[in-house]
Image (cartoon, rainbow, N blue to C red; front, side, top):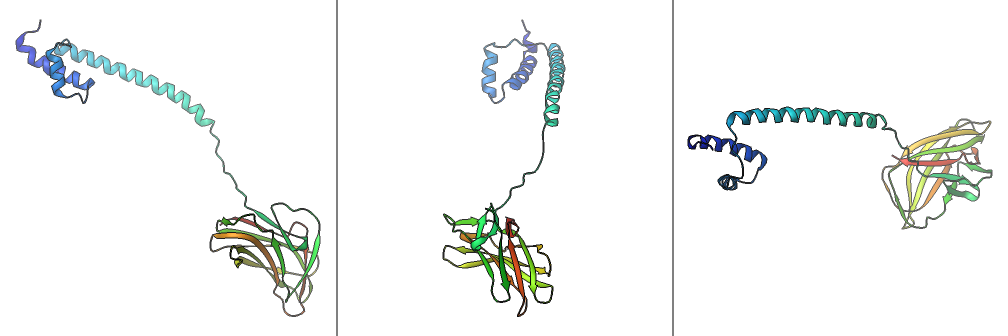
Length: 231
């Protein structure tokens, strides 16, 4: 039985223990539980000793848990594979009949003649629905040679689209130098200024930039194309 003179001190200790385990219960409820004798009051010295033992036990358990978690995490981290994913945009192939095929060349070889007056235009099939595209970066390819004129001469390669109002919109263009002799695999790049809205059809235009009497030959066999990626 606890002496009355020491009760206030033991009561203070018990409040500390009780509040540690029941945060938020409130002092009023703690006081009521104490009065009902729900807890045996522990002498001050034994309370400290037991508290130290609990701390030591908690530290040992913590070290054990950290060890187990680390053992599981390290192999898992070592098995993580990092890399990059390359997403390819559409490819537009010039084809016979001045067609522009998307993503797959159906085969065959056709030759076209371009001079300083007449362009060669390849029209894509009308899309089944209007589409919007990101601001594009374009790489042009053309297989060409110069048949008439003083070399080198320029070819302008332009990519355009038709919108839902049937307006022709230029995306961007590049120019390549052409010489006489064998067909040359030529290429150039450019970037559009804006995103493409309400696209119904694409156009690949090849334009001669020489003076009067200049003539070029364009070979269409799968090399002459435009590749589109995100700018």
